[in-house]
Image (tube, rainbow, N blue to C red; front, side):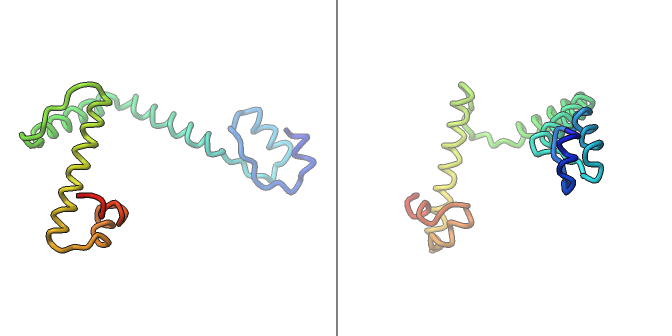
Length: 134
């Protein structure tokens, strides 16, 4: 690495995985160059750091998750259908419920005289999708 960089003295920035041998080669071959992490290693390092923090605070995270789950159970409306089955079935049921809610909202707004071109941005949909719904 050092020999290769010596042939390119204009190099200002070198991206890599920051391994010791690699970093040393950059320092010897291009001492003027700034060493930076590439995108993949940034995400990898971030993931490692988050895992480390989560592991250190595992008990507190578990406690907070239980409290949030308990709050969510108490806050859930009693008329919601029970969710059961596989993860795929639960996801499909949740998606269906979300679509039904959006269609009901589109109908409510249409009944108030709101045109599709104004409904679409409010619901994050295209005007054409609003026109076809409901």
